[in-house]
Amino acid sequence: MKSLLAAVAVLATLASPTAATSTPTRVEASATPGDGWHLAAIEQGRPTREGIRARRLRLELVAPDGGRTEVLDVRQRGYRLADWSPDGATALLTSDYPKPVALRVDVATGRTARLPLPARVYGAVLAPDGSGVLGMTYERQRTGRSPVLRVAWDGTTQVVSPDVDSGFLPTPDGTGLLTHGTSWRQPVMRVLSATDGTVTARIATPRSCTAVRWWDDHQAVVSCVAARGSTTLGLVDVDAAAYRPLTRRVHPQRMDLGHLDARRVDGHLYVQVAGPCGYTYLGRQHADGRITRVRVPHAVGNVLMVDTQGDRLVLQHAISCDGAAPRSALTSFDPATGTERRLVVLPRDEAFAAVLPFGERRPSGY
Image (tube, rainbow, N blue to C red; front, side, top):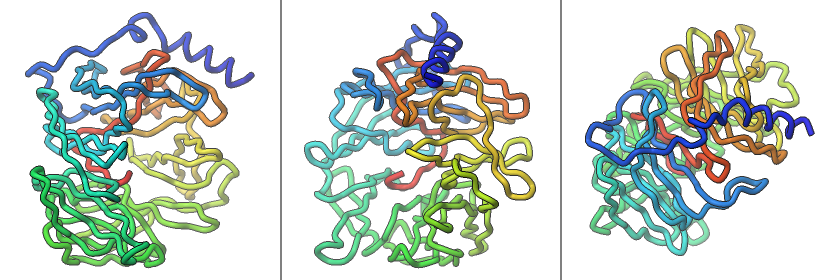
């Protein structure tokens, strides 16, 4: 009942006639993405307690002020937004149904090119050099290994690395791939050449870690296994080959099951915290290491931290595990004052499937 009443309050507050009926414009030459822009994948279909039963997937550019530009609208065949090139020119959609396939999207024109992928390829991202896509292949049942393949736009394939055990994150300069060891038990992160898979750096970590995203041009946020199956965050400096902790477990509360991402705003560290039943919320880390929940106005379900804009956080409101179904929204939140400004509020039959910030690479399979 509490979730239902809160959801009604959210709809009354967020779903103004302007927000509820706003629609994206068609792509124009002036809609050139840059800092503060986002590429959003929006599912459209029948709303259920578990989310949208998607029939279509729409790509939209979202400007810093919330202005929307439609890039592409496709019938839903299991497509997901997998990657967006750092220059904003190319998006990558992938699907496993009925066979693995990649869809290259020209963001300026909406034109697409379809690329069939080899069987068992998953977690595909754009190759840093623009030559095609990179993806992992699951071969462990047959060979005991999981190679990384480059699939060129003409369909030719090349083995980049003979064996990785998790996703990989292209380096900011495009020359390498950040991943961990060949076994999930190994407390090490490696940098592999994006050309031939040669190991160019090894960074010792306290426990097994996986890459989340780049913190800056030489440090990456990594998620590391902690006590009792939870996770904490650290920073891996690939230039100095050093690791330092970013979050830690200090008297963890019942709702804090692990840390997924972190961003610094106005001198404070804000953390994406995993709670029970797939629930996620926004937390703030204090000087003693404690992380407390940040109350976000109008939030009913999950609160996802998407990006930063100056001294504000870009947040996504999403469905929660208890069936509370607020409008899917993208907002700008000032954590210092606790005020929130809506950027995009979707109608009831739509929801964000993914929102990618301009210029920010994500790991394969993220």
